[in-house]
Length: 309
Length: 290
Image 1 (cartoon, chains in turn blue, green):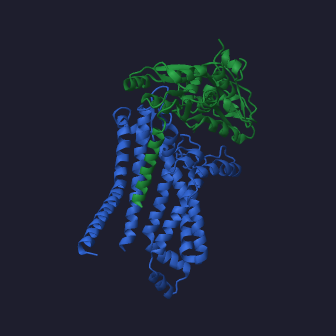
Image 2 (image 1 turned 180 degrees about the horizontal axis):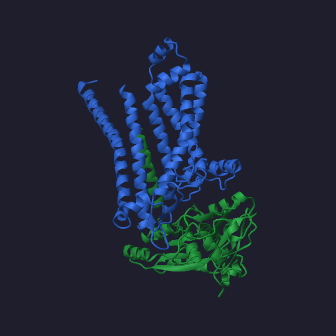
């Protein structure tokens, strides 16, 4: 083979290489592009609301969400934000102990064989579509709550939280387990050499060492809980009721509630295009975007924290 | 990971374009709108296909607002709506397409008031409904309306309503509370006609409103009277047509300008005997016979 032809081939390969590099670069950049264009789109669709019906005090501090009123439309989001927060908080208080417990068990206490089986099952749990979870919520969990507490209907904050907890556990387990596995074995060996029991190793050595990763696991679970829509719409009862108030016990998990996501999903379909209601729903979307952005960013920074070590 | 996500997004986008694009050509009628009417529209399309195999009627739900928005941009031939078009929507349609939307009433839908099948209540007046559903209304418990409904914990009236953008929500408010009054907050706002009946069916203390076609064995109709003390009327075709049943509304079909060609043929068929028979079969109320 002559030298010229070999060089020709190299040129061609180099070109292909460059082309593929370019393609990968564009794919990489496109994610950023999509995020920004989505943000811009939501902002543009909702911008009319800021010019017309937006009243700061009402929007953030009123619990009255009556976007198609007989009289004056009211766009108070406090009850919706509180609903989202209540469902997220309660679901996390169920999911975090179970999720982190499972992560510790997987990474520290079980045999490799059980670990493999468990991981497959947990991934399967993550693959169940949310509408199926919603279905379980309005049938199985609804009936159990009605029987156990006597409230009716059983579609309320507790129901939605249980469903969300079940959905968030797989995320918390897999990321939590990664974080624990990232702790160098020399830590465990050193602790063992000092005579620590396995439990002492776990909560005195591993937890502090992996705390950023575990925090990220929890925050991603929270992000899931805030952003989940259809299961929450089906399970929480979808009523504009403040879950927190001044009456003991201050938080009412057996009341129905309504979340930001469910409100958008339920009302967008029939809202007249470019009406103030339609625009207000986009502003809700903007709020949601902001909330999940902050949570994901915090989680990201926390993960970056562990990588630096 | 990031790039994989973006690829799936663009795949979705191209899929949507493909679906949107494949409706061109041939004798197709695009029909989109009200969720209340989607079963009816589907039944019409199927029945029509038996006698007119050359015409393809594609039915989509999504909501009255979705249908009207699609009509405004000329994407559909017929928009189904369970509420009249708003003046602003008419203006947009005219500005965008240059044509005046034309309204056709195809039939009626009676909104039934549903309670759990074990609820001893038989009849309710519009005034009592307003006290239950209306802003500032006094009735929060079944005992307030003189009904002993099972155990004390079922005494609370669980109000089941619809999401605020639904045509059913607006119509029921106008029929029960009038033009000025709003709903009391804290009702369970369901996302579909079926969901209302379903929730009432498994909740002893619930009351809800939905199309009369959606009745199941777990719920029962309440008779409705205009004034307290008057005899209540059950929702039925006869009582809607003679206007004794007080909560019934028209079902609208909107087209851009006068319908033409195969769209006109289809609309005419809907208003003729076979089309009206479909309305009756699906549980709605046909137009009065001329």
